[in-house]
Length: 217
Image (tube, rainbow, N blue to C red; front, side):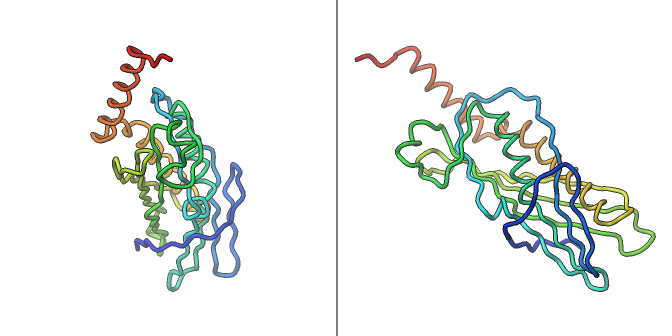
C-alpha cells in the first residue's frame, strides 16, 4: 500500500523524541529528531535557500480502510535536517524568497537552491505475519543561477524500515531512517552531479580569474 497524496498545513513542535498519539482510530505522528552533521568538504559557494511553506509545514494524511486514519507532520523535521545539512555543505547560506534574486542579493550569492518533498509513502502491518513498517521518501533539489536560470533538477530518495511494535513509534523510526538516508545522499553526491560539477568549476575559474586580475580604481 504505497501512497503519495499529501497536503501542507502549518503545524509542529521541534524536539528529539517522537510526538505520537492515538485518538480513537486516528494515529498522529510528529517527526522530531536530531540529524547527524555530515563530514564533507565545504563547497566554496554562497547559496540562497528556498524553503517554502509546502516544505516547512508538510503534513501527510491518509485514511487506510479497516485500519486507521494517519496524520504525519514532517515540516519541522524537514527544516531541521535540510538547514543543518546545507549550512555544513556551503560556505554561506541565507534564506531567500524566490528567483530571480533581488538586486541586493544578486551579486552576493552564487546560486539558489529550492528543496521540495515530492513523495511520502509508507506501509504498516495489516497482519501479524508482517514484521516491519516501511517508509519511502523523495525530495527534489532545484539549483538556479541568481538570475533564475535553471542549472539542474535532482531527485533524491530515501528508504527506512523499522520492526513493528507500537505502529506510531515504528513509523517515526522508519521515517527518520529514510530522512537520514536522504541527507547522506545529498551531502555525498551533490557535487558529483554533472551539471553541478560544471557549475562549481565555473565558479572556481571565475574566482581564480578575479584573483589574478583584481579590479583597480
